[in-house]
Length: 110
Length: 121
Image 1: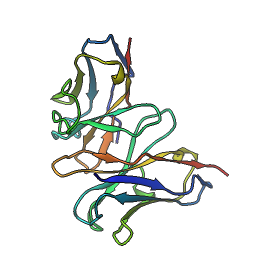
Image 2 (image 1 turned 180 degrees about the vertical axis):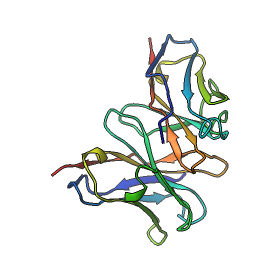
Image 3 (image 1 turned 45 degrees about the vertical axis):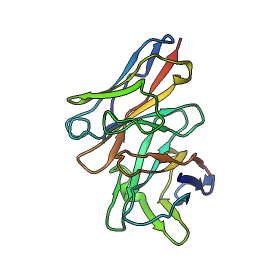
Image 4 (image 1 turned 90 degrees about the horizontal axis):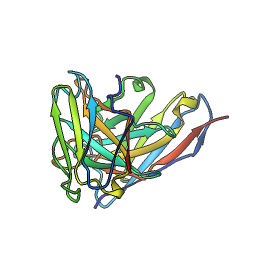
């Protein structure tokens, strides 16, 4: 299985909005509404930020939002804050009953 | 709140079998109640899903690792285990255990802190 495609890096100034794309195929992103997003700070375990394309777990700020169109999912961070600087990974369930991750996107707050 | 903690040898020799345990606290581990997963991350690289266990009849593995992976649950010890055979340097990574949650379909809703495994002679 191939990893989902994410941009290597995205940057923005505090208060701005940024969007991270996650491109897959009709066998993963396009097949189900089972796309999730994880935030990972250096040396820490990933933290679930979005599940099932648009849902936020309890405690995740509402400035994090997710969407999907066809084979591409997106994570938008509105009102960017310094603590949002981290690596972000998308993940999708696949038609062969496996999960696949994206290569990761480094978000820099300028 | 459920907590997960990985443990196991930090150094494994090439061609040997890597064995890791995930100890669960804050809840009982039961077959058929949640998906229990292993995910790894080589230094400076992205996440790779290894596989998941639901019951002994319902397990799913990454196709690229399937021939070398075994996962199991030990409900008496509240532990979840990973065995990866015939390891090479490419298996050097931080290994995470994870669990989904009620109403949340994701590779992992709860994660352990991770444990570094180095494959070297």
